[in-house]
Image (cartoon, rainbow, N blue to C red; front, side, top):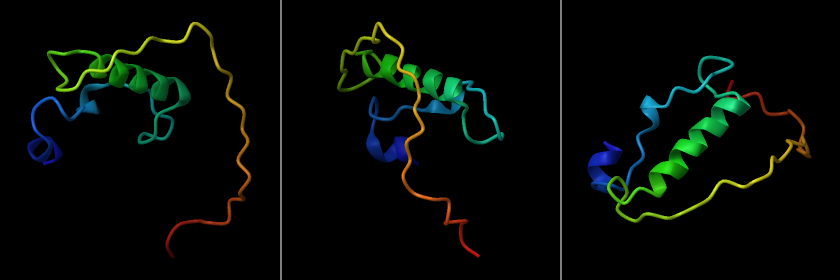
Length: 78
């Protein structure tokens, strides 16, 4: 439905991206990195993307730092 509404070359279909998932739904950090890499590749391909943007991978690795300030008080709707 989204692809039909946005038009050709304006929607990245990530259903074919195989990313490891810790809980079967949400990707692991490595899986998320792969997913983002695939989006960036798509964004730079003029034959796939209506408005290509060229980006380069950084030449360094950023280490994850857990710095969330909020507690885990929200547990979903009950």
